[in-house]
Structure formats: structure tokens, C-alpha cells
Image (cartoon, rainbow, N blue to C red; front, top):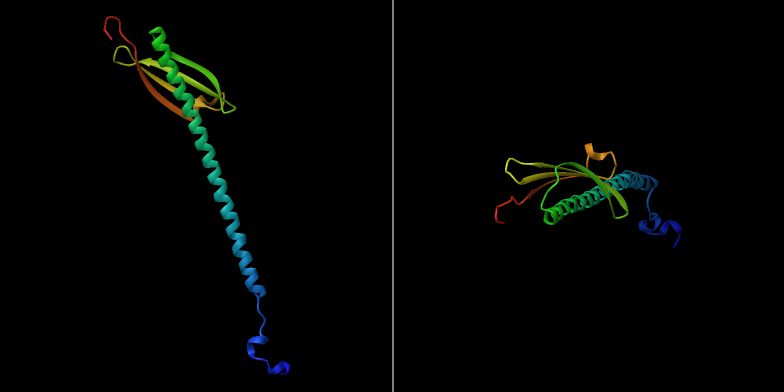
Length: 140
């Protein structure tokens, strides 16, 4: 059998042409950065949610501390108080403002938490809590 006597299938070469390879590379070149951008956005969102969760813990701890002070002393503080705490190897800063409501002995506390010392104007977490102080002679 001579070279020209072979069937047609044997004469064609198997594989991709240069155009097919270039198209495939173009598709990968467009898709890969889009996937990396999406992954980066997901990681940023996860980091933000983790910060929010930790800031929520700090705010809840502050409200629990106010409840403990109320139980121990029988009084609540009013006005603005600030402080800082360590959680998960990071410094967190909180600001607490207590004010009496229209109901006597009932206080509203606004607690703001940030990971920056000057972050009171743009906190990561805000928490409103209410506490009731026992009034003398109420029989509670």
C-alpha cells in the first residue's frame, strides 16, 4: 500500500489547530480573572462578616456588664462611657451612652463598636439595649 493508497482518515492529522488553541486560551484568559475577582469579593465579604460578629460580641458583653453592675449596685450609669477590649488578638473600641426613657427607671443604652480608636462616627456594630432599674418601694 503506497502513501496515496491509504484511507482518507489516515491522511488527516489528529489534534487542534492553532486557531482552536488560541480561542481556548482567549476563553481562559477572560474567565480566570473573573473567577479570581469573585473569589476575592467572597473573601472580603467573609472578613467583614467575621468583624461584624466579633463586634456584636463586644457590644453584647458591654450590655451584660451593665446588667451585672445593675444587679450588684442597684443603679445604672448614664451619659457616655468608652473603653476597649481585646478579642481574637485584636483591639476593639466601644462607646456606650445611657439615657433614661420616659418610663421612670427604664434606661436605653446605645453601644457602638469599632476596630479603630476614632471609629465612633462609623462603627462596625450598633446595639440598642434596655435595662430597668428597680425603683425603691416597688416590691420587686
